Length: 83
Image (cartoon, rainbow, N blue to C red; front, side, top):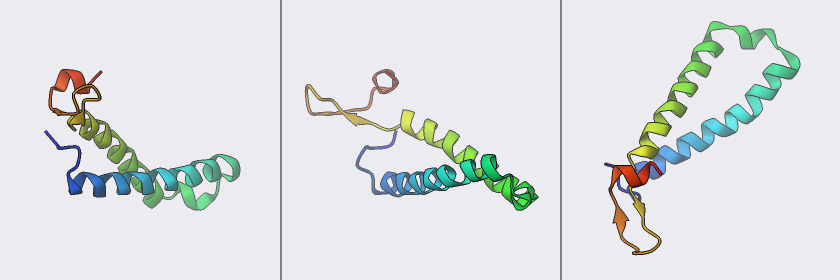
């Protein structure tokens, strides 16, 4: 279980934000202009790795505790985290 205020979790979230910003520019450019360079194997591998990072982020989010709004205590119950 990952604690909500873990510094490594903060670094993880920064990486995910950077990847989301990259995707917010890369996807429209690829759809609108279809540049030949983006069909290269390197870009395909990079995009696949980014997709895997987003999939990993879903798993990390479901394994991260949260603070209960009613009690103010940190909740580690996986069933409540998934709701």
